[in-house]
Image (cartoon, rainbow, N blue to C red; front, side, top):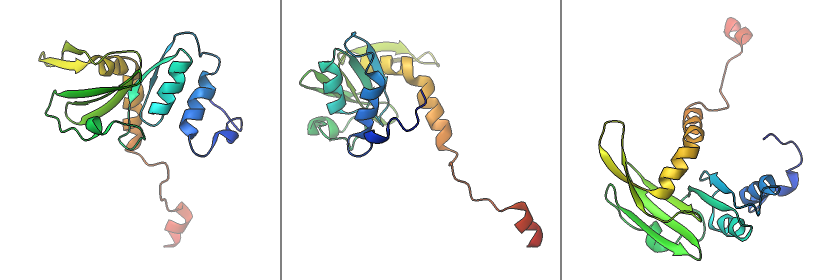
Length: 163
């Protein structure tokens, strides 16, 4: 969705929450599931969506407010998970190659056995599996774009000729 000017009043503190709620305003209250990346996901947004009968699952930035300390500070080995409910919101942490913080108002922290590309059996938390099912392409695009900065320092061709 592309917007211009309409979201100018949404700036400032809580901007990401306001953007999500504005984009979802015609879809709240229908029992839908929303998958959100860590730029937008927060405990306060999850609470607001749940009050509006909308479920959400997403990765979580470690710097967000409201993450339980025992989840944030937990030291995990590969394959381990830790979680805690905060009201009706599951906040969890799982370690594969890196630690991943996540939240879900729809799924429990059940470990589900899957087979990776090499045929090895792995256990992943259900919220991570569901998030990856719907957001894998978005995360891949973000990763690819991160390698190329938007602003590039270039020298104009006519300056190069003079030099």
